[in-house]
Length: 324
Ligand SMILES: [Zn+2]
Image 1 (cartoon, helix red, strand yellow):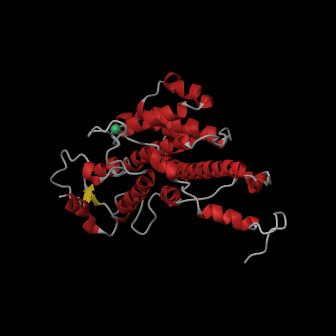
Image 2 (cartoon, rainbow, N blue to C red; image 1 turned 60 degrees about the horizontal axis):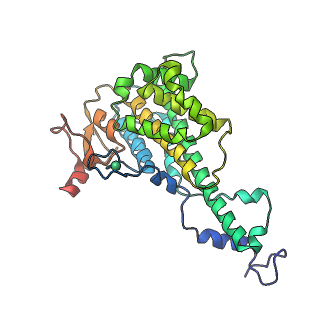
Image 3 (cartoon, rainbow, N blue to C red; image 1 turned 30 degrees about the vertical axis):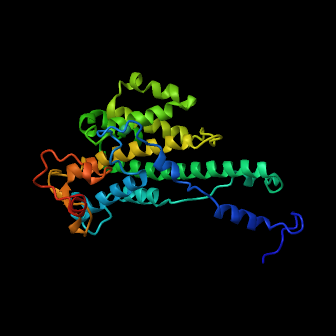
């Protein structure tokens, strides 16, 4: 039995123990909003959300694709023993690694109201839940940003050298937007992210001016959107959410767009993308797919990949076996 906290009435559980018990009873994970930001409301069989992987699985799938392409030496600049796209895979691994965390914004106030009053405790619990979810969203976004920036540096080597990295990305995507847009569900993911971010008043004007300012559309506009959002975050302009976890969706929607942009940045450096590669490095019984098809669809369940033109080559391995 631990010693009673002297600040609490005789017989009350010690402060640390009270907190631990509260944590044990938590009904949420800090990363829950990552799964909730995209939800189908139309129920149409061709809805873009059908078969879409949850964000954390999307990150893991991208990591595995780069690892497999690296292992089978599909990138001219990396040998089998190298880490392929080093900064990219490090960022992706950390972004996907976060499972849960706990943040307590009342720590700074030292206010003990929550220990004496149920209503105050409840309010603090809600604040802790929002702060935990917000911290998780920010951390995931930051690691995904690291991966995205590293991907630009590697993919855009020698292009637009006088510009800052996110601007180089914007110019690259503007120049190659037709190809970039072939990443599955790219346009709709971008529209969702732009819509969600536009709800934040201080972002809305800048987002609205994306088209006018540089005549951007498609992938170029998406690269500009993620640049604007990242600047907004890095300058500390985003307040803690006060009422619900909706503000977390901004981070996840932008993260999704960055992952899709990263997929294109990697794909454009694969010579002969029509040649097949195994889905998993060193696990060849899981099937293979042309690198092009793989990189454009890895964020979807393999059961919904568009097979046009690839039917003969594609071996979907175990997943097909399970569904047939
Ligand atoms: Zn739908």
